[in-house]
Image (tube, rainbow, N blue to C red):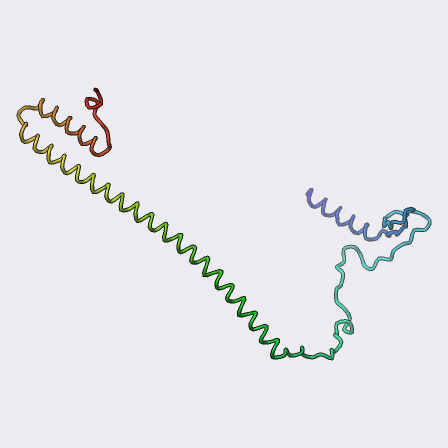
Length: 184
């Protein structure tokens, strides 16, 4: 309901505004002032065509839309030397553009090749580390198997030897020294 009242009052206000005259006055300092109140004795009332809510027409009379016929119906043809100069300039610009793209592509290709080479070296190093770790694990697994078969009757000795063996494996794999090896 409130919205309806606002819309009705706004439409009435717009109708009343469109009916008010607009005055054109000249300020003492020479500025033009347009106002809805009379601003002096010399105020001129501007005639309003339609209301403020009407949409102005932008259509022009048929005479105004016609263009004057020109004497030059087609541009002058270029001379052969001018055409050759334009073709040469076009060819030169085309070569410069191709060279620029070729340079940037070459630079990008070199960068990608260096990244590829670096990644290949890192992969080889990782493969080497993995192969070394696998070999170390295999060796120590074989040693642990031998200890279990030799010392299966003496569980305490087997446990001590397996702990030593695990410490040696950790040192070989990770560069870790056992607490006994660190002591002087």
